[in-house]
Image (tube, rainbow, N blue to C red; front, side):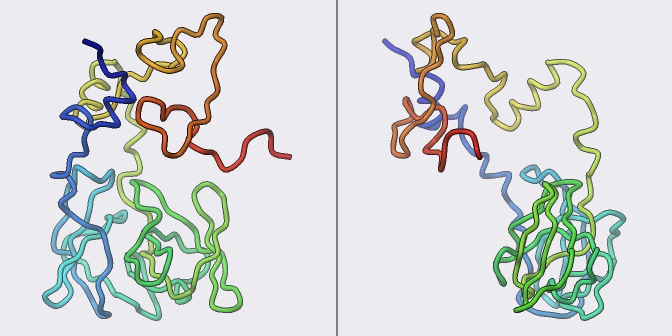
Length: 232
């Protein structure tokens, strides 16, 4: 009996290739009211690279990535006109040059960008028509609505990637805990029965553009790229 190739096995889903739903217990977001919130707890979430803070405003609890030097019991202002470190405010009220994270892409979506450990964006300047210019970590400038909310500060856990794995065994258990496919092998180095690009006699690599609706066995390479060729 035949055996599914790796891309088919991952596409079908199994005990080996599945999302650990139990890890996603905490949902990051912003409250629907203004006022003053209090940090009630610092939480380790297996689904997030950064530690989370639990905040309480009145009887409502919500979660946000922790910022550097935050402590339990600290007061956080929401939608303040003069925001400080850790406060949540709309972009047009935040001073230019501030480091911000968990930025809303559209007003009211509770934060979509800059949520990994150690990351932050920089608010550059206010523009016309209630627009704000934000410098992302990849040095690209993004124009957002001034009514989008963000948290002031830098996300904690910035040294996460600085610690080396030292040996392959440690990396093995790290990837196993997260249900990741590791080690990754180049497709052209595989046998023909293991991958559509396998057994590259003379390493003549086949076309790498797959159709958007291709089945898992053929859904390899570039998935319907928007453009090909060298950018002029």
